[in-house]
Image 1 (cartoon, rainbow, N blue to C red):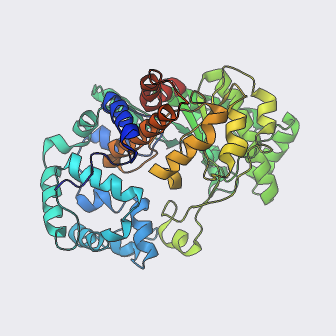
Image 2 (cartoon, rainbow, N blue to C red):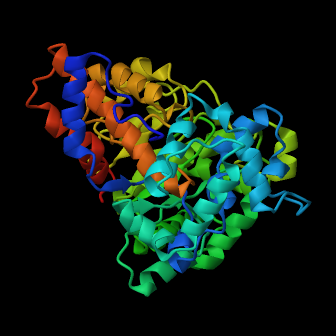
Length: 468
């Protein structure tokens, strides 16, 4: 019995469903453009087998273990490592068994659809995961992972990935990207410049990170001019390894455009660890504008990922560290917050700024009107907690009337879970085809226009926006 319905996510109405099916059939096998994500470049550099099913599907995936945690399952029992090196479960079969016993908790979630897609299409499984089938699943997947065709590079080709971007800190040495390049493999794995650790005075080790960036570039990062030059040098270094974008995960979308003397003085306070919370926020905001100016110079697409209240649980942060499922969405202002940056560079056609949000209330009120008029702005896809069929539908319904389709950037999967990449793109393609079919069926789009738009939403817009 197939785990997935062939008509999943298509309309119930017969005529509209037929339209959606036809659109989907035309674009379902297009190559995958994955311009923003968090897969590990080491996988592709070393091309070693994945360790076991638990390490592939459970331990690294906060979408999975946060749900189990909400029902009282301990992260340590799922193999999530502690920052102090303390005891956690290391037996992959035990971790998998606990996951399987609690798999029912994911019913109705996008994670369930992604996982079932991976089980069925990647591993050829046709039975449901539960406590009774746990060992069979584990053995079957483990046997597959031991075969050459399930190594990272082989799966990359099988998934029909045309290009995938990883995300590295500004001070990363990019050794794995160098190893990929030197290997002669033709898979396109590129990096993206993530400078939060050298831009955010509130991040642990900020001053040390800035000093390291100075050592790497030869610029005196104890000075404002040297600090900016070091950023330019690191961005150029990342471009050598294929980077076409920078990525900024700030708590808010705040931007500032300070006089250079004021920015230099604030930078000195940041280095000395003397910034107030408000001053740190001002500095982050000013640096977004500086990054936008640098993007005009070097062509990197500027991605802004604001609105996550990160590490909500002090206990989890203290025990397990960052990115452990306790980042929570918050209200985000864009109209006021982005105005300094947009007044400085917003009309420049050589700049592309991709805006993401975790605040759906901003779609129609703020984001679509902004992207619908400023030449530099594009809207990123429904992201993170809204990377779901309903989230994608709401995004299209609330933004298209004002921003259109061509002020968006298609889909990107933003994932650490490698096997979920084709699943996530499949969901997005089905949802977009359904939306286009609905527009046709309700007389808002000519039927002969829909196939071209389906192609753009699935492939063309991402390729163009991210210069891939």
